[in-house]
Image 1: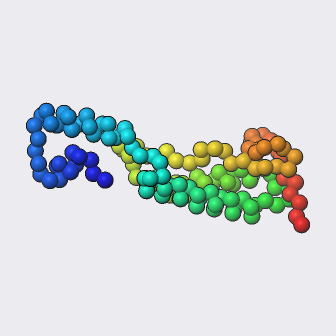
Image 2 (image 1 turned 120 degrees about the vertical axis):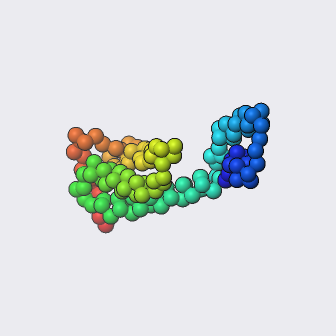
Length: 133
């Protein structure tokens, strides 16, 4: 999508200083009103890519869940998968600065005897009690 100033420049039109000032105010308002809901196809694409990364991480974590596996190792594995995959996406710089991306919430494992999700500290040596049937 082009801003109004880009379209004006593209068309080769010129404007007076008063029109230029009014145009810049409108552009600032348009920039602030960026659409961030699902009606924006870029937002949909980002959610779809995020879901692919999460599904890949879950598939890998499921294969790593074996009796005696350390919970910290599982969490670190999941975080690594997410970080590696997100590093491949949206590498274009915005205003000369790289876009931040990565893990927004720590990878958690639901351990049998721990209430709620668990994301252990590196010093904890909790081992999974996975029962194979």
